[in-house]
Length: 589
Picture 1 (tube, one colour):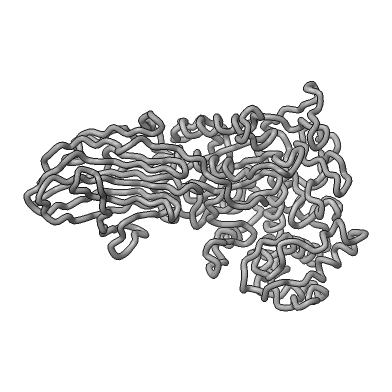
Picture 2 (spheres, rainbow, N blue to C red; picture 1 turned 180 degrees about the vertical axis):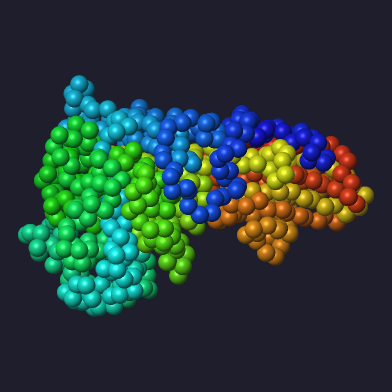
């Protein structure tokens, strides 16, 4: 249970006033006896029989407040009256934890515009619904990747075998050494986009496929991470060659049919158009309002079926796919992947490129859109149309954001803030508890803010020991430090710390961050005997861009010769927290 005060259990520290935008942060009573705590991550897969079912956040052991706050944020992002805060006409969201769907929301409009700037008559607007079908854009790459894993299981492809073994024509222009693994991890050396674009430079599908085979890399294979649609376009051609079947059939037979994902696939039928979110009004190519057809021009030029784009789906269908991954490749008795294949999707093959962690097909640990759910095993992807999927095996949770941010034009602000926000909300809703019990001081905050927990004047006649427990789930540049002052708070000096626990930093750090580690640490600092009064403060500062779940403190203790230091023990923030608008960051995909 989070409370806004530290009690006598924290030795000399007997009271706390904590301000976040003028209000104390509190959490509900612990309802999580049978659900994961964020500070006690799971290892291994969820039980194979886990089936999604609706429930309230409290029924899933979660604090409903962060989820409700996220829904209020979404309402602003969907409201044109919000001015610069307006991001997309409509969106559908879904959060699940331990098999419980705790949030399933919609807002705004799936169809609103007639062209690039003209709104349709109001009676022709189509509201977004929880079952609205969205163009997934690059989330389609995950379907191609899963099919690739199925063919790996079947022995039709091998990760370290050159692509040219399956497609001899692929060896053109120095690509003979590129392997299947390098396609799946974007380390093949391909440029970001085909030049010229497939839809512009070639007259038919056959010539466009030849252009993919003829593409010339710009880097030697394995030397660089560079996200490129050409990787999955090439993977599509491999899969079609080794199976003798087109990609849409492979996705249907291997994924959507066994999992009963009835609203998922390429080139959706005309009778589903009223449920499909419209995308861009395109003048080049002259397609007009793209509605019910794939938005990506290269995928459109390939007939709507492409390795990098083309899949349409709903939040509910994607939830089934996400739970299948958490279950180790099986859902309702239908296995589409072996457990080993799922482990390969969670394994980082890009350790040579630290900021670009990647499993086979899935991105890993990308805080720029995963937010508080990010971690070494966290899988996900984004899509250029305004979509994202984040799967966190350590908490057996996932978050889905589907939007039509390119309706009616792609010239819109980044959707990365809501992508992060849904992950932040779900992470902050999960409980954390002090080791062995006791109260917590919790600091979960937005970008560009600072919070402090400050003692009153203290006096001691012997050297001072400062001890505390910390759960630090932050970006590497968002830091927790402990500082002392001997001049009434005019100047502060960070104390060197000795930190123990799983993944704890070595040496004598003066600041802590721990986004990749979900474990409590014990921290200790020593102060020489002070000639006069001194103060202590715990200070947590975020930069303007990304955040993890935040910081929890417990078991604060300040002693001299093993005895609590006497003095004024009130703790107050040294200034209210102030929220700063964070700049857009990351890339649209």
